[in-house]
Length: 67
Image (cartoon, rainbow, N blue to C red; front, side):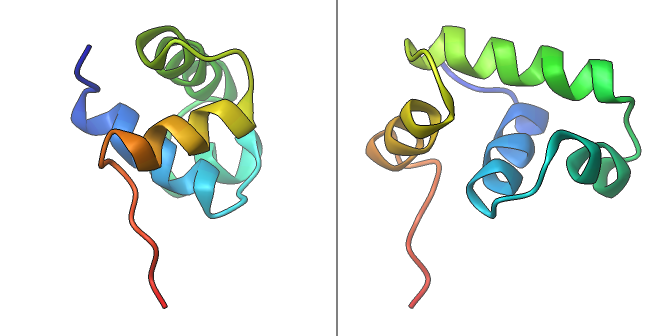
């Protein structure tokens, strides 16, 4: 299932090691909204935790390594 533009933004910030609170401030959202986005991302990618989100994000092409 395809991630929304906002979910991709949240995914990228998760991969940058930002906390829920930091992501909320960065995107001008409530913590509750960020948590909802995180749950939706996990559901859409079929994973259970943050490590799975990042792995699946790379595998699906939503994330890239910047060296």
